[in-house]
Image (cartoon, rainbow over all chains, first blue to last red; front, side, top):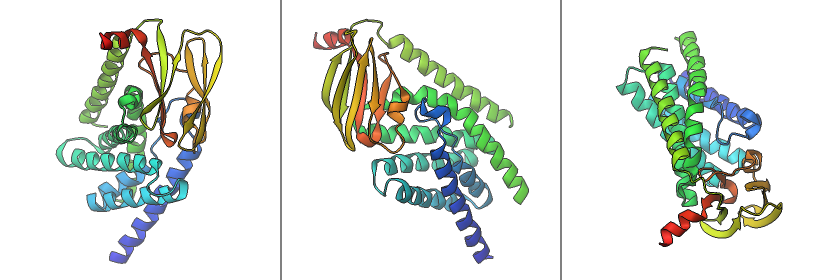
Length: 163
Length: 122
């Protein structure tokens, strides 16, 4: 049973890395709205959070950030800290939302997407020592609703399928 | 989606609209604007946006030179070296609540009203 779990989690991890790379290759609106993306890798994180629990989801997000960092820009690069901030904010917020509120998986997904952008903006502010990044906040916040709902609905179907 | 989900979405939408309105209302309408360019949180360039002519500037970025164009009260990044070129794809900005941030190059471009600066000095 333990081997099966490890196998499944590692396959989910590689899936999340692939989704992350695909997403970076196809920017939404051709990149004219900075910071807005689908968040496809969050489908995997949500699925693991609901199917396996917080510890596994946290571990998967962190390892994913390291792997994507190694593939794209190198570990401890600026982009790496940016992703790590988003991933940690998002997974902690989703865990708390799942535990303490009546939100369904879709609502948890929207929460995750809001905190993902909040995390990235906070990291940007710290790295650049400037609050300018908050200029992007309202537009990213508004876009996190449709993208969060989309990943939430997909994760819901996945959880139903595997239950 | 259940009721709580819908409430959450409406709440987020309301918050984003409120922040956006506050940004619009607090932005200055003054025609007296300038673009301030920062590299690694230090000011490296300050350009008057009242000039109608198109002008090009180059500042040093973390990954190489960043090319900035000023035209008709607007500012944009033309060329820079970064993985996804988000800041050059973003295009023109001209309002004081807008910013161009090129995180890989540690370059930030803000638009400030010169009147605001006077107020601070006063």
